[in-house]
Amino acid sequence: MDEAPAGMEVILRYFSGYTPSQLRQLGQLEELYREWNASINVISRKDIDHLYERHVLHSLAIAACIDFASGLEVIDIGTGGGFPGIPLAIFFPEVQFCLVDSIGKKLKVVNAIAEALALENVRTRHLRAEAIRDQQFDFAVSRAVAPLKDLWQWARPLLRPERKMEKYKNGLLCLKGGDLAQEVSESRLRPHVQSIEALFPGKGFGDKYLLYVPV
Image 1 (cartoon, one colour):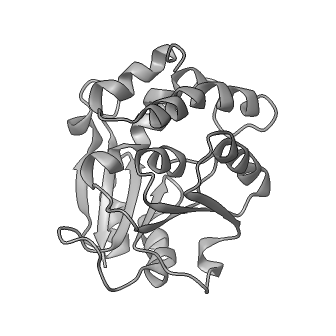
Image 2: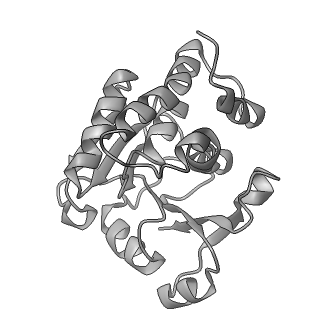
């Protein structure tokens, strides 16, 4: 692989064991997102310089907590520019990811990046998650898309009841930030809450969390 982008070192600091193909895919992310972001804004201008830390590493908090088994099917609800779905698809090449969004121009970026990276385990659907009636998944993931109660309402009908992983039940994994007390209370759920700052100390994730709601 050519010399990795400088920002990619933060990923290699916390994760290892990548294949040459995965390293190549990770290394291409910055150039691809910069190119597409110039015409279709899917990442804020101030964040594009911190892509690996603020978007890729943040997405991989899910991988730091749950090691998805081969053969699982995962839906990314409201994927936007492909987060957390694209980094997770690179990390878990034997897992099938369905990236869903209601905004077509964002999926145009996602499809182009998935094709450029040769991610054969990624497909997209241009619709709202709540409109899906013909498919079920083992896990749903999402990144700051909607309140927890809404995410669960959309995700729950899409989740298979039977589990494929011994340690973890099927469920919703969502990345969120800020004071979550009221949001969790309004959801009437009891999610498992993991501090992302505890996973990646000193990386600016002080108010960000991973919430896991099992079926």
